[in-house]
Length: 256
Image (cartoon, rainbow, N blue to C red):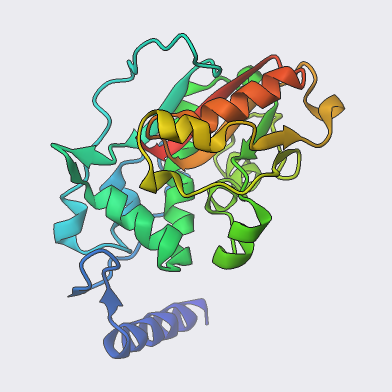
């Protein structure tokens, strides 16, 4: 009976794909969707872009991924966070990468289904570069309530909401907690994408606060966001967390 169910499932899936073929969110091309591998059997520390994203992007867009080549982001005397890591490049030779375009589809074009593969990629970077004792709390960079209502979701939270379950799936020993309501954006700010340089720092200055300082006192915190450009936003968040008593704050983003 089990074999018949599997055959029936494959037939149904084939019919659905025939009637509703996959459409690449980046280039809008129709493509044959490949079935994702069972990632629970993979080395979570070494997931690659094509492996995770093949059910979601066309082959041509898959080939356009630009990995991070260096972890050395340089010294900044005003840097408040301890270290920063990202999965891929946002730009290459001053042009947006396929990864960047996919992130924009997720963030601005309501392609919420991309949250799942992005979350897997981000978790892969987390377990690759952080030991379990290094992080107590994982928290998303918050949106202002007005922006949240406009968008309907906080993209940074969607990138971590299933991390606890993923840690169990991949047998990753970790005691981190996900806190989405401690760090708060109390002041409305202009979109950082429209600003450059020092304007970004001024835009987010004093825009964040901590609601419950005892929760972060002495804690090692990992800040999550989708894109790290100048670092102005995550730097301001880290500053507030340190002022609230955190031991340190690290940063992890999809793209840089």
